Length: 332
Image (cartoon, rainbow, N blue to C red; front, side, top):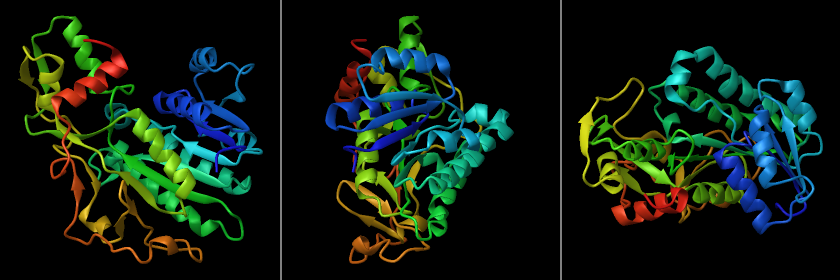
């Protein structure tokens, strides 16, 4: 699926895009990797790690809001991984028009460009915040999911396949609470801000996120959402790992925050199957023959099931989290 293919990554200079590029070059032999993003400085920085003279890589400056630029970039592309988005919850709340233009209109542009240029497969990155959203970021991501799932109805006699992945907080990603807490420790802060003692979150490493996308590229049939089985952790436990001597300052739940996040809701569970390492949410509307045939004999989880960060069977302990943080940031 990947060897010999031309792959384009939107938001390719971000945390995910850089790790995905690294993984692809280490494990496959793509014909070409195209990095598509609007930040020329990040292009320059990434090109120091992956120079064009050494790797089959091209750097394409552009914005997913610009459909014309996408059409030019998608020329000859086989696979697209869509990671570009406005992700910062407060920024989306304060700049709603910009969030809509990027996360929703940008998604429409990608879907249309992929169909117009006969891209073989598109895999889209989503988030647990898209489930029963309480903030604009989550709402735009839910809209994005619906756009790509419904794009299956536009395929017609073409072969383009749209699949999605949905996961939780990435350990050490840009904007993650972990580097923020590590910086507080360097400053000698004795109290760490926690919204609520009960708060839990899903945690996934960037490597696991990359492997999930690879799985979707290799196995996606169209319209499904792949959900990883990942551990949860209490935010108070994170403080204990980073600074066992520190105290906690309660600041209250911020606008747009939840106590717990959900990856599969009760309503979605009735058309969700368990395939071992992942859950797969199947499309409610099937637009192509045999689109979900490989899942037809699998039992759906049913309304009584939900997968949220507080009812998870798997919890990450302090030692495992410390190893993850050390791998990403070094000793602390």
